[in-house]
Image (cartoon, rainbow, N blue to C red; front, side, top):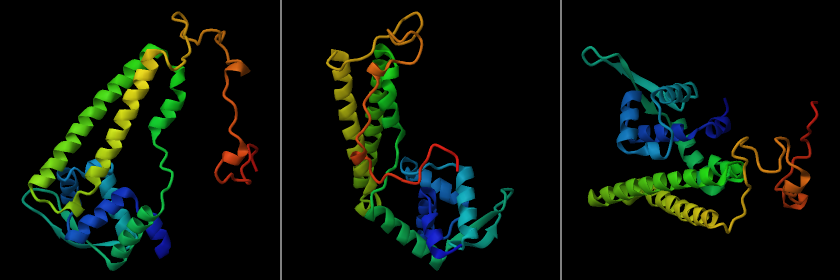
Length: 234
């Protein structure tokens, strides 16, 4: 695998692993414990199985190397890993690449928002209010972590992501609360559903008429259309 390919394959979890090994050599179980203790599971999806797989893949790419095997008591053997020079380059280049250029991340919530009109209004309101409660809890948890970092004089460069996460949570919470209030007030038009069949009123339990569809987006507003795309198999 070429160096460019190695850089492009550095996943979020791989970034976290390489960053830990930049601090000091560790075995995968210690990596997992450290990531959880630092609450980095707020930034990347951390699972023991995926972490072990990530470390193995980084070793195959020569971005980390096994340094030794330890055994403590009756515990299973644990292999300690160290970052390589190539791994250090891959880490720095991948961070620079992500910081430099925003890319579409395709979060799932906007997908559900765009199709939420398929839910009856009372159900949509109940679900939105449930989300508001979860967002408030996450915001409080993030505030607690920010306060802990300040109280323990943790250098700010190590927890700069926390204020960013808080800003994103606060922005989403404000938007969802305003949207929920708009929907609840009746200011936002919503479809009526037949309580017996669950189908939209007037749909006849079949496909909606053309009158209920949204217009197509003008082609000039579509970013970078791919002329090679076709519905027909090649």
